[in-house]
Amino acid sequence: MIKFEVRDNQTLQQSVAAFCRFLTDFGLSAENVFDCRLVANELLGNVLRHAKGTANMQSKIEDGFVVLQIHSSAAYIPPQNSVCSDVYAEHGRGLFLVDSVCAERVTNADGVLTVRIKIKER
Image 1 (cartoon, helix red, strand yellow):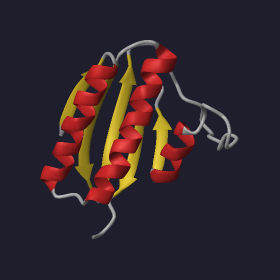
Image 2 (cartoon, helix red, strand yellow):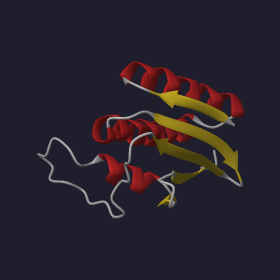
Image 3 (cartoon, one colour):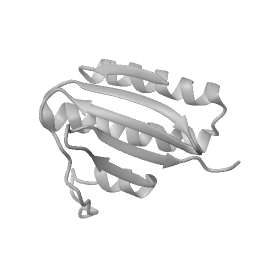
Image 4 (cartoon, rainbow, N blue to C red):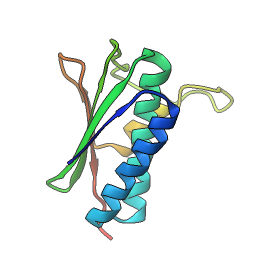
């Protein structure tokens, strides 16, 4: 399991890099690491942009999935449904991409967002 706190863009980059090393050391393929990096960047970036708070993330690998749990220090719950925005829009694709990669995305009553990313076979 790996845990970290993200306060700004610098700690976001450092934390996601450490997360990717954790996944690589576990033996995940480059494709799986790419998917997990995309999801972590989008979700943590959303907390920084929209909640204006810090994010705590922990991740573990269980039963063929990478499980990420993200908690925001400020009240932030992403929309339940995501849609692909217009091709020319400058914002609005992140959550759609997350949902395209993840097998599951849920937020509990405490505001903890959990996503499960299926590990693809090599």
